[in-house]
Length: 363
Image (cartoon, rainbow, N blue to C red; front, side, top):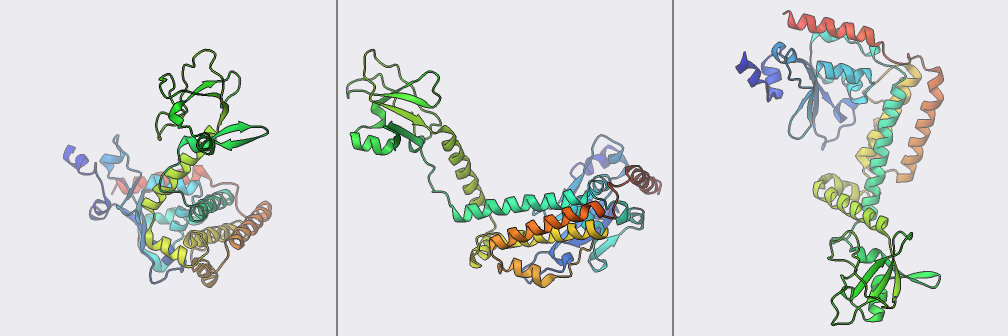
């Protein structure tokens, strides 16, 4: 028994299939939607159940995927839980068109789609689409506002107060012929981010400089000699520097990880947005609207030309945002008269799940 448990401790997709644990396997994504092109990958999603010794033990494996994450399999319990939440990906998996189903165990007939469709789809589909829109807006910002290779110094977020305005510290230092290392700062009580600035003679060692290094995230303070006159007052935009550091890191992490082929395609259509992402965002909202209006989910889309025109970058970015807004309004308007229940009947689903597991483990 121990060797059997150990064998499944690092369970993979091959183990699922070779040990007869597969319940559902489908081609998903663009090919299931009828939106595939010559460049489209083949995504696979599926459902499996755990061997009795694993399921009844202390180890639970909710999900298994390959290294590229284009093949994902959900354990039966996890699959059912996500369906109860009206997760778009799992509802679409359950509603996969017949020509994209590679294998389906007869026991899954006990979990028909209509058992799960509910008004929760309004929030799950629209909410997922909103997340994708924010992702697209972030990408739009990255493309149109690239970050410099080198992160800025905190000095570039410091200003010298002058009359009713301010002067960038770097400009002021240049005008005065002073190095930042010659300066010492003293905090001013009850004035957050404001410092008195003093300048040391070349042979004085009390000053700590404004920053200790180019990587410093805060200014330095010095022990100021008595009676030394204040040379200027310094304002530090610490929040602005923090935002810059975060955005700089996010941008270069994105550059490092981005799909260069997909990025090149996005740049080639000249619209500065992720066209594939926006196509699926609009598709999600259209599907969500249909579910709320009709109580039906159709994975294979009836408007491939429109959706592929978005993928090809034929729409302006603002057009797509406006279109998404209209679809969300349609969903809100249809919601009060939707034929769907408020939520799935969890008690009924639980009994179905128990029945399936009993049949699987009594074989």
